Image (cartoon, rainbow, N blue to C red; front, top):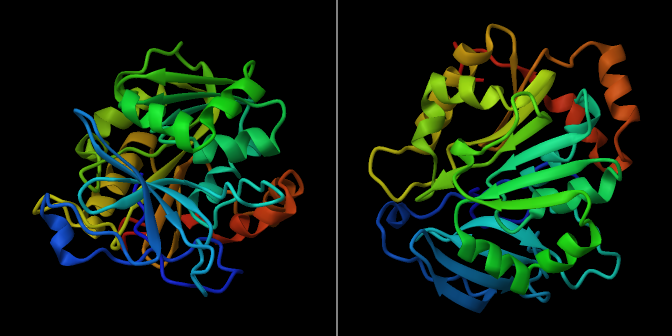
Length: 306
């Protein structure tokens, strides 16, 4: 997952525009935190440099004021966030995690694999809005999950939804799951500030699709121009395009849709939901806060990159 700290945007934007990280983020050095962030925890594991930071509630105009952020990679990209001081405990985040929460009504069965669990931002929204949904999450780094339990309320989330939330430690690309066992899957896999290289390979998508039932769907964070990798040659826009091309080859013509808001891209597999009656049926099964996402999808067009 990667979402650089955004600049302020109008509250009606479906996904807040990520701010492009500085060019220095292409180096493995750790970027200092902006003034509006207060460091809460700093942990190193074999896989990550993990930082937890709070955005000041007094950060005037900041779209994430009061948020708690999980920062990974030297660039300090946001991989999860929550709002622990909200009185109403709304799980929505004004980021692409909200788009992920629109997928369940389109699935043939109420079960989701979350590949790249992080601190559970996507799972929290899914469990909140869909009481019949079960979620299986995979996270490579056990230290990320430990931080999630200590600082992001994952322990309470697991306790409250013990019959519906199952978190696994391991490589999401090698997840052991029954063929077709899930109604759908969310794919949010980043390393060193970039979408995993394996996600630019057609065979990876063909293998991952085997986790999903016939007529199931996958929703994918593809990054974009505002995702700055630590490695040279991993331009965010080029990596996004390569990921989408691999998906289109794996799933077939007309079976990938995209949405983008200011260089932040999410893809969805399956037939496009563009007919007015289909879009209306999808909206009817969504909470009001999420219905605006239905209208921003369009069929993927390889000629233009989107």
